[in-house]
Length: 440
Image (tube, rainbow, N blue to C red; front, side, top):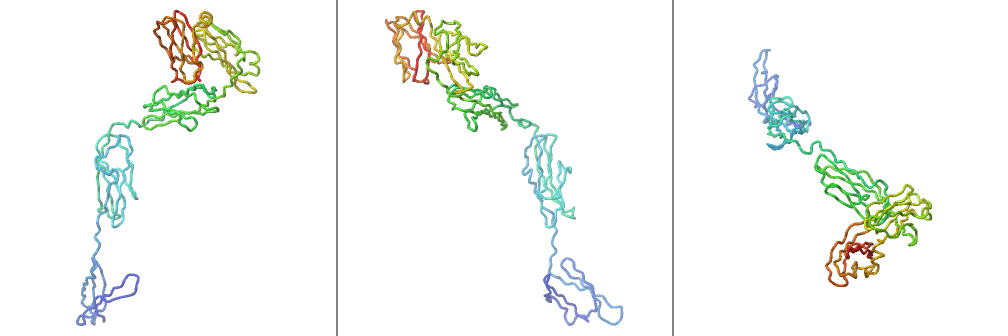
């Protein structure tokens, strides 16, 4: 025979404390069944009396425990993160969401315009969607609680898919090539070297950079693309061209090697045989003497001054030039198999008619000039035209002066041009005077 009582203990311990005992005046019970629901204890008890059939009593005790409320999951669309986000037709869009619950998340379903698209059962919840039609779409993500599909939450976003194609879609890297000079081309120190390149793309070429090794030496923003220098150091130079186009596309060309040689000046009497003067448009033939041809492997003839043509014979050591004004400097660069690898020989040609008929009429001083200023005196009472070119025939001075005096005098200022050799032609009274000008 026992009185009804209730005890409690902290989980994992055996420390029981009494929370309720039936008063002494209450009935005694033989046995009963316990049921707990919603924080209340339900005890069905049989009264302790003689006989097999006894009354059953229901005892209810409030345990003071509140049952947790099962709330739906929370969901957040993380991409798209705002409404009216814009995309381009054909672009793949990652639809992503985060979800939490006081229980477990079984899955997150994604919908497009109200229709199921795809689902994901593990965080981070994400699927890829590639729209095939331009327009406005409603994207939705719905989270479901494990075992409770009726408990779910949905969030939506509106997105805009534009039909305009991204201008950079499908754009490939530009094509760039160095076209000249040829690979392993050789130049003399001080000679102008021009690197030419071509670049093409389906979009705009913004610039072409030229590199000597890893050093940026030039940039060209318009076709034809080139870089020029006459100050390259002795030795081997490995040039590359890098092309840039719209859409941030870049291509580096292959390497083009250029070799700069030392120019060895031979003795002044080193012979190039041939005429020492000529007339305008007269063909003049020159030959390198046998002594300088010994062990030679190649010849490169060139003419400093204005010319109509220059041809080299099949033997290599003979050349014919047609000077425009019958004067200039004929030169040949010779490469040897032994000793000094490269030697350059030159011979000055003057205008025969000018030298014989007008000798002594023209005076130039100082010559050479250290500051590039030359005083010109000519015994003539007519107007005088002065025409000056560099050794490549490029015009640097051209002017006609009025003259009423017995002697023409004029200072010619070439102080702004580089040091070197220049050719002066002076025209007066249907005559021509020619001279070499030297700036030191």
